[in-house]
Length: 254
Image 1 (spheres, helix red, strand yellow):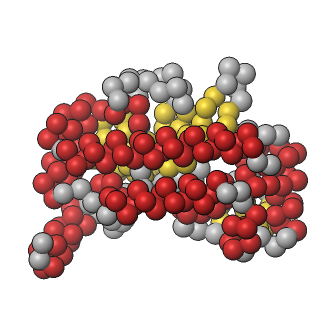
Image 2: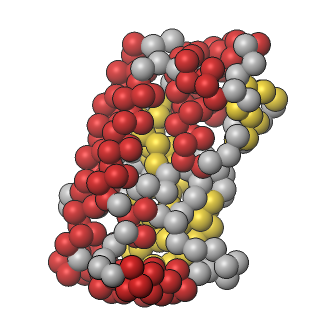
């Protein structure tokens, strides 16, 4: 494709996808769709603002929409009968929320909750099913991301079983920063405990150790990453494994 042609297509995409604040579409899947598919899908996309700890999908409830994140972060949680939960996946602008519907399911066994304020483009399930037969590139990318998130979930299951809380906390902070591109994150001990599947006291101790070593600054309700290199050294090998999977996905869809 000629450079001028590509530039014209990209410019038209950005112009067509500006919201009321002037923001442009950032979701990797939507951004890289062929122009013909993007044009077909665009009228059905609704820009929505997401709030911290907003539940996008609840375990056992009917899924009515999928979400293509532009920014922010969502956690995929498995919820036990006693109400306890543990994180088995993280989704940022590289992916979408709503994997079960891609494989024909109407409900999810997992809860998906936002970890930060952000925006997303919401797509009604009926519109999605209508569009997929005419959008093979979209269908392919949705399925490929589903596989990537599945591999991430498998790695996190092993991580939660094999590694200590300090390593897992360092890994979680790195994964989160990769997706929201900021040093400061709004987090509480209680919520981190839910994400890591451990007690608040264990999270507090792990955070104190990371802070003592100069990797993070931790105050009530907020964590700031001060030294990413040291945090990478403190994280378990699961971070590098998941990061390589994510980079491979982003390279292949670009």
